[in-house]
Length: 71
Image (cartoon, rainbow, N blue to C red; front, top):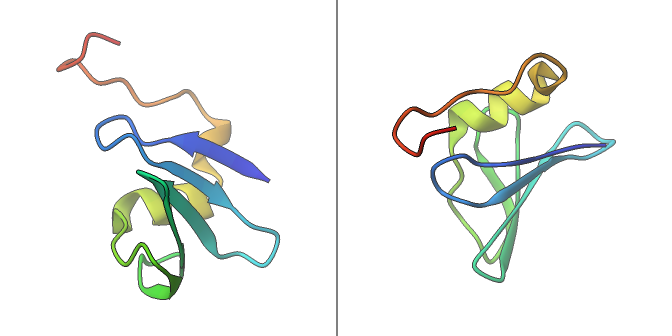
């Protein structure tokens, strides 16, 4: 599985074996389609672009940089 921390929102996005994206943020969890559409769970919103990016396994490339937080 591929797991990544959202650089701005801080949620943990994890690509599951079934192709769905599991997001955990502030103690809540949700399951989303690769396009960001909510499937189940208490957390009902996720960054659709990050879900798409993660589901296409782009996390295997160089990590995104965020000049606003200096990384």
